[in-house]
Image (cartoon, rainbow over all chains, first blue to last red; front, side, top):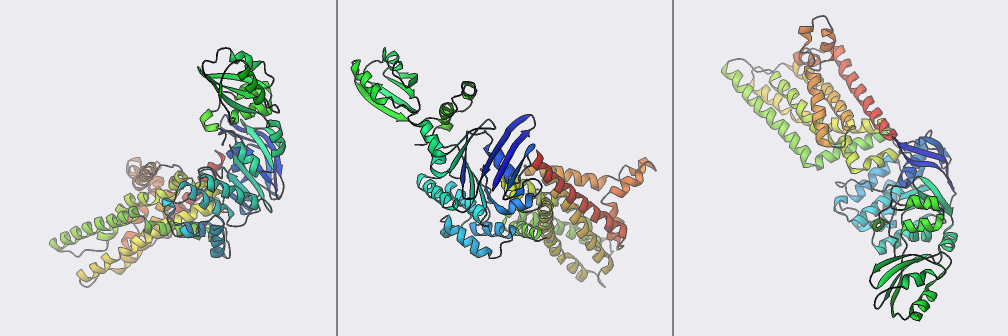
Length: 323
Length: 243
């Protein structure tokens, strides 16, 4: 359904994506995972016919995105990252407008259907300008589903939603993905793992890893950051911990606490606990904290040169993995 | 064509939902009313019958300032809201978008023009034995063509910016240039003076439609400006994609 080959896009001198190649079949949910500015949006915009690539080829539903752009646009439902809404229209008017642009025959029925899908029937006559962020997101999603497209392209579909809504939307995407092709972007690893059949990790415009969520999971298993707190001063604890197989990168936090990372496939926590207690410390707290996306890249790619490229690029607070 | 109508209808409706559009329409009619009143009083004092020109002349000038305010929103607002992405990924051709926007703005101004018919009717009552119908009809025909061209230029300029204030002043600037471009033509003599005169908007209005004359070349002029501006607007929207 989606075929992308050697896609490259330059904005002036800056290269946004480079030689991106992937496929997505019918009934497949493909996740685009990467930090902000990695090229997710650019790739999606090209696939929706919003802009042409600098070089490379892409086709959606069998139509070339450049030469048969209108055919592509008829078959794609697209939810851009900044949800495109008219604040001075009601939800119903807005969806009817989009239905008219798509020449839907039974427009009102279709609008009612999508309103039901996104659970917004009761807000149909409300002005979009008065809606909350989560509701806007759902109206945007309704717009993308309106013409029952074969291919859905969703740019960060769960951003700004509360946990309950996030859950609903993820469930909805999974249902939709059964008979459609869904390409969604996210910077949340767990979301990609939960929802997608296949995950593409993109960074700095290049696809770094292409894998199934299961094998991503196994590559990542045990890889985590752990916070450790003892009573009293840490003193020589750092050097003791470094001797434990699987422990790496220790960062002292304050006088009595530190954080360390464990290698994938090795859960070093039991051994750490033994060593800490054995050395005469009182173990007050040992708590796993999520890896940031940056750290996940480091874990997944394990390519030292690529890894050193990554560090310092991404503000950590934005990239913190959920949960 | 269906898409053109869908977009035009949304634009047209939106004007009636926005206080700014009412304000512009109100100010246009108010200023026209004041000038109309002053002209009628002046002609009464000087003992000559006022003609339809006391309405058409000021109305054209007011439109030069009011139309940029009406067209500035058309494409600039889509860019600001991010809805341009929605329209450019919908199965709509770029020219359909631009022509739809033009039609929406044009129809709104036609409504304002229709309201100004109140003044000729009033004038007809004041003047004995009634006003000359010829210049009235040609004057309004010319006005419609003229306004169509102005709105097209406005839409084209609206595609260039996402800031509406920038669009307003850029549009007003272009209108004033088009309106006054023939001024240096006398000084230039044969050296391109004729060309400047041909390019000038006012030349195509005041010398013919305004005086009750319909000249095919003026109709062709206004229609070509409209089509050319809409074409440039479409190209401008298309080039956005390549940026």
